[in-house]
View 1: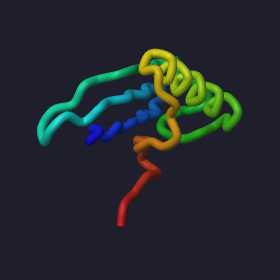
View 2: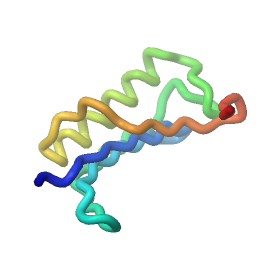
View 3: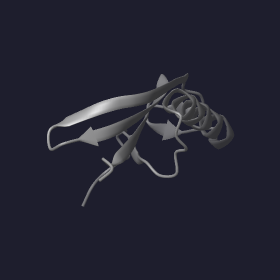
Length: 87
Protein backbone atom coordinates (compact mmCIF):
# COMPACT_ATOMS: atom_id res chain seq x y z
CA UNK A 1 0.00 0.00 0.00
CA UNK A 2 1.26 3.50 -0.82
CA UNK A 3 1.86 5.86 2.06
CA UNK A 4 -0.33 8.99 1.84
CA UNK A 5 1.11 12.30 0.63
CA UNK A 6 0.21 15.47 2.54
CA UNK A 7 0.77 19.08 1.52
CA UNK A 8 0.74 22.07 3.83
CA UNK A 9 0.84 25.73 2.83
CA UNK A 10 1.62 28.40 5.44
CA UNK A 11 0.72 31.88 4.20
CA UNK A 12 2.44 34.54 6.26
CA UNK A 13 3.22 38.23 6.08
CA UNK A 14 6.90 37.62 5.25
CA UNK A 15 6.85 34.34 3.34
CA UNK A 16 4.72 31.57 1.87
CA UNK A 17 5.95 28.05 2.62
CA UNK A 18 4.70 24.89 0.92
CA UNK A 19 5.74 21.49 2.26
CA UNK A 20 5.17 18.10 0.63
CA UNK A 21 5.57 15.03 2.84
CA UNK A 22 4.89 11.31 2.77
CA UNK A 23 3.39 9.80 5.91
CA UNK A 24 5.38 6.70 6.84
CA UNK A 25 3.82 4.50 9.46
CA UNK A 26 1.94 6.00 12.36
CA UNK A 27 4.48 8.50 13.68
CA UNK A 28 6.86 9.38 10.87
CA UNK A 29 6.92 11.51 7.78
CA UNK A 30 9.48 12.06 5.06
CA UNK A 31 9.83 15.54 3.58
CA UNK A 32 9.69 15.23 -0.21
CA UNK A 33 9.74 18.86 -1.25
CA UNK A 34 9.65 22.44 -0.02
CA UNK A 35 8.85 25.73 -1.70
CA UNK A 36 9.53 29.07 -0.02
CA UNK A 37 8.62 32.38 -1.63
CA UNK A 38 8.68 35.92 -0.20
CA UNK A 39 5.14 36.95 0.63
CA UNK A 40 3.59 39.77 -1.32
CA UNK A 41 0.11 41.23 -1.04
CA UNK A 42 -0.36 40.09 2.58
CA UNK A 43 -0.12 42.41 5.58
CA UNK A 44 -0.87 41.40 9.15
CA UNK A 45 -2.57 38.21 8.03
CA UNK A 46 -4.90 40.02 5.64
CA UNK A 47 -4.80 39.86 1.87
CA UNK A 48 -4.35 43.44 0.63
CA UNK A 49 -3.47 42.65 -3.00
CA UNK A 50 -5.10 39.45 -4.29
CA UNK A 51 -3.02 39.30 -7.48
CA UNK A 52 0.31 39.66 -5.65
CA UNK A 53 -0.72 37.16 -2.96
CA UNK A 54 -1.84 34.68 -5.60
CA UNK A 55 1.49 34.98 -7.39
CA UNK A 56 3.46 34.35 -4.17
CA UNK A 57 1.35 31.30 -3.33
CA UNK A 58 1.60 29.92 -6.88
CA UNK A 59 5.39 30.31 -6.93
CA UNK A 60 5.74 28.57 -3.57
CA UNK A 61 3.61 25.66 -4.82
CA UNK A 62 5.57 25.44 -8.08
CA UNK A 63 8.87 25.25 -6.16
CA UNK A 64 7.49 22.47 -3.94
CA UNK A 65 6.26 20.58 -7.00
CA UNK A 66 9.71 20.84 -8.62
CA UNK A 67 11.61 19.70 -5.53
CA UNK A 68 9.20 16.84 -4.79
CA UNK A 69 8.59 15.76 -8.37
CA UNK A 70 4.86 15.61 -7.60
CA UNK A 71 1.86 17.59 -8.80
CA UNK A 72 0.04 19.33 -5.96
CA UNK A 73 -3.74 19.08 -6.30
CA UNK A 74 -4.86 19.75 -2.72
CA UNK A 75 -3.38 21.11 0.50
CA UNK A 76 -3.99 22.05 4.10
CA UNK A 77 -3.67 25.84 4.34
CA UNK A 78 -2.69 28.00 7.31
CA UNK A 79 -3.43 31.74 7.37
CA UNK A 80 -3.23 33.45 10.74
CA UNK A 81 -4.43 36.90 11.68
CA UNK A 82 -6.55 38.76 14.18
CA UNK A 83 -9.50 38.60 11.75
CA UNK A 84 -9.46 34.77 11.68
CA UNK A 85 -11.75 33.02 14.15
CA UNK A 86 -13.17 29.56 14.72
CA UNK A 87 -16.55 28.35 15.87
